[in-house]
Image (cartoon, rainbow, N blue to C red; front, side, top):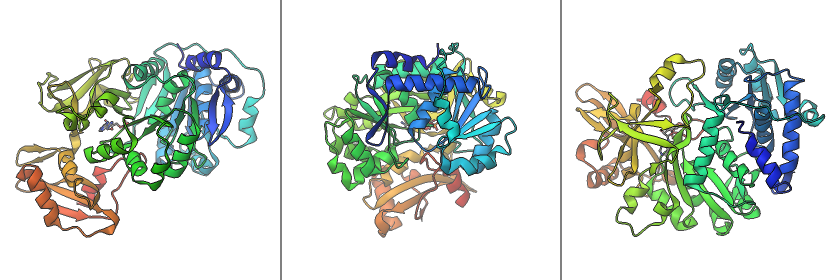
Amino acid sequence: MNIAHLLLGSAREFRDLPALARGTATHLTYRELWRKVSVMSMHLRGRFGLARGDRVAFAMSNGVEAIEVMYAIWHAGLCAVPMNAKLHAREFAFILENSGARLCFVTPDLALTIAEAAKQAPDLKEIVDVTTRSYTFMEVGDPIALSEAEPTDLAWLFYTSGTTGRPKGAMLTHRNLLAMTLNYFADVDRPPPGGSIVHAAPISHGSGLWNFALLARGSVQVFPESGKYEVPETVELMNRWPDCSIFLAPTMVKRLIEHGSVSELKSEALRLITYGGAPMYVSDLKHALDLLGNKLVQIYGQGESPMTITHLSREMHADRKHPRWEQRLASAGRPDSCVAVRVVDEAGRSLGVDEVGEIIVKGDTVMAGYWNNAEATAKSLRDGWLWTGDVGAFDEEGLLTLKDRSKDMIISGGSNIYPREIEDVLNLHPAVAECSVVGRPHPEWGEEVVAFVVARDGRALAPAELDRLCLDNIARFKRPKDYKFVEALPKNNYGKILKTELRKLL
Ligand code: AMP
């Protein structure tokens, strides 16, 4: 079973429907894409001399070529190593060296950086810029047959975003990706043929992982010409292409709903926004539902179980009359169909309702391990269960509420304090644009709570006001002992706040 079978199926079923688009223009139909991929595959095996299981990396701004390259890699029985275009040169060098990639595709903006990084990657034999003849030549020649693959063959080395330490390569197999795709149809959505997905988020991550489900249903994959997430352009493309699905990180949803051009988004144009990858605050979520209607699904997953641990369905978002509506919105929803999810103590014993522990997951989407990292694999995979490093609790309805990464939890005077709870309260203040709460070592209490706050539009904010808000909403011992007002919060390339950096500032 090769995940590229999905494209073969769509080439047969949806032949002349658009498969890829650059901005508002169709780039290739399904039939054309299949042919191109089958010829590129011949070049990968022949001209570049790659053999089953070899790794092929790419460092590309979002563009149609990313999909061409990925399916050519799978067609040829190779393993893709997608790298986020915004990584630092040192991170590229690390991934190229660690994965042992033999070939790397680049967009011109990254050609120099990758050439430099390649000096530290002895296995890397060639770099192909997708705007040069070396790439266009890959269309020339005869197609070859789809390479067979075992379900356990590696398809995607997913390098974790590394909010702490070095990235690790989660080994995702063809089976993992297929299970994730079927789970989309079971728990997220089953779009009718002829829809679209706009890739506004990095293709190396969530948006790229969603490509399979939409491609299998004959949707066109649309790439903004800017190669980035710009709200007016995204809105224009959603209006242009039918029945649009989109994956956005919570900060991207916030930018959408706070941008003036959202008023131009036609309600029939948008099918679904899936959001996830980081917490979405309830106040933002309500605002999004008010503006966009019942078109949101939350997913909670991690590279090690891609896009699949729990989901909060469209129906739960919409059921405003439900007495637990707000608690539901603050949760990450129910376990996905394809996995078992437990909340456990350190010894792996299941905990009861509302008891907080580590979230562990088992199922067909769970990675095979970390590439060349037996130690990290042994820590994360125990008896087939993936220890996520996330902390949470199931409630009486079986909904999982995420607290924090275990390492972000603050222990003060022997009590566990979950930063997210305090952040949720601070976000209620209209002058708070963003905030993040961390622990600072304290000689007596172990740690004390400190909040970093970005004021909206440079407005003045007094600590006393925020203190009052906390006292009105949460236990006294949880309120920050210090507020640090900053211009911006440090974030990684996926827009996730780097608490490690904030702790260093203290
Ligand atoms: P990554 O492997 O880079 O996709 O990061 C996965 C991590 O992001 C998870 O382990 C969680 O800590 C966090 N995360 C993912 N989805 C959600 C969500 N819906 N709500 C809160 N945090 C999330």
